[in-house]
Image (cartoon, rainbow, N blue to C red):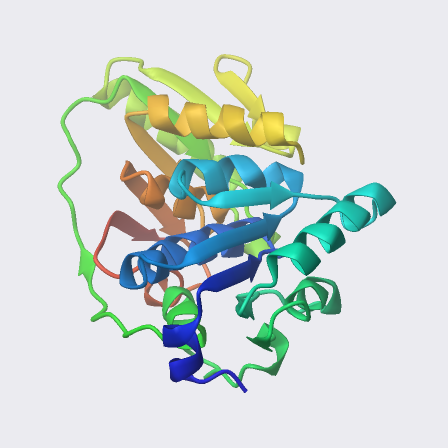
Length: 268
């Protein structure tokens, strides 16, 4: 068991982040709080290659090693690194697999997320805070007033769950509304599924690569507003402090968004 005293006394902290896209962004937001809470420790983050650009963007001063767990040479390199570095404590938030827990076994003390006793219903960011033994935050929804003019709009309709994705008919309604309201802004639709694309608008196809991740980060940063479902792009847009219109179908916003978020929520 990892006690609060172990965390306070540790000099080297390892984070093994091998989980879903949205959960990884949630992890990074709370790890940033952890580092601000314990600024004098040495940190190392392990993650897949496609997630490294997000680590670099949100935690630019923290060492991050990207690897493929199925690549023998990657595994040999990281094994040597961890044996030499000798981390004091380790965490793998939102990672339930034994593969991410494996790296924590190089730490003197660790708590695998799969062994963490968490409440069934709790905000996803609060789960990570509880796991990392950080103070909980008072949760609230800010209802921002969207600007009167947006010239670059990014629409991310797809979620890993079909039931949480923005329906195609709603995408057409949104485009028509934005064309009328903002005088035909530049609209980009980002998805892995081509069914969401429209010929008259720019397209971004997600892929599992570091290059694609960096391109998407750049796209979000260039956008004036991000329109999205309950999905990973919601969390990266929130972390980058963009104006967000988020559509929720089956999920309650208070379960998945960060405290004090500036997001306009729409239930459909």
